[in-house]
Length: 543
Image (cartoon, rainbow, N blue to C red; front, side):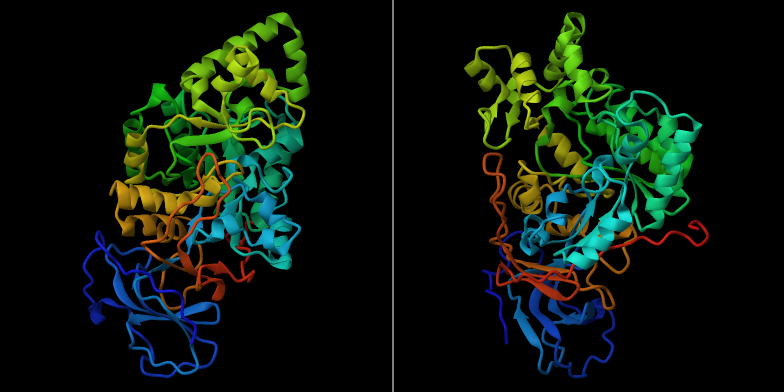
């Protein structure tokens, strides 16, 4: 018999346990003994991924499926592996709607391909291709990536988006122009191909050049190819602050895309970024609620951090200045008139984000590593814009920036919405890659009590699976795939922070991916049981 280390039990803050057999799904063959190879997770506090109230009981797994969920000790087992989950939380494995996991997906070692930063948080499924980036290397190759997941061995299940940015780059390069009819036809064909290879939908990052050069009508035309094939539209919307069209206009643009194409639209990392839009979450929520009442399918994900991360160039450099790519940007800086305009626009962007003290530079092994933009400008005895340009023009491209721009009132208000789920936006240099789920639990469930434990679990599992129609995942139900996390409620916590962003989280005692033990006794087993989750388009939509 194998036992995971018991926790200290459920303490204050958890609902009282009322175990009523009638509340459970019928247990076919309840008295029949199990055969060898069965796993029983015994005596845990079970949250099934949708209900508000937990129960104490057992989960029985055979092969890659859950076969029973029922009252503690009722299942007779013979030759089964029993995992003692007394005092533990048993929940569906978490599903991360937005990741930047290319380094792990394409890792050249089995350990990298386990995706440990996510696995150790209790994540069993990740979505990739986010922000319109497409497949690793900026490719449009959904089929190739999903085949690689199946053949190379990955720790987690993987679903992938077609990337609008990758599509546009392939056809228009970095040009700031609209496609002609032939170019648009090529772009649409690439999206259709990706959907027919199993893509979840189309992802855009209209905040970023060259995607930012696309007008709404172009995006709608391309999105229709995903819509007719049953896909989803996921977006880093055009403006999360006041950079271009404004936050609320940007929200309406996404809703318009959903309205005109009929596609379900999903906001990635939904937020109000920068002091000028703090409090605007009230209006964001009102806009989404109005659209949903109208019949537009709108959802969002969110990470529980007050700081975002992207490149310093994306945060500060005006989009017109990077039309044609970085070489064109460098040439513009050689022109005194254009350089002056660039600096002026950068200064305005910096002010929108709260000034140079809000920018942390995490890139490794650089003079600015771990310092604020204001600090490095002082050390170099230059103004913050000159310091930013030196970082942006670094030949290694090491200009990642963490921007402290969100207000906790907005974060909490959005988190409480029934159509908002958890997504890490996990990327190197930010603790969200290693610690999003335990951070949300530790801060918003335990410390602030902004949401309940059930809300945390449901928004990280069943709500995601139901929204994106993932086949038999996200819930603890008989017949569902055995993606299951068992964590210690007293020990589940983040270890990563903004200074040490790459520390693995703690507290997950057991993790099963498709029925295989990926974590046992708090340590990874090396099992790589993840699968490619291909979406099947409606009949007749693919040649």
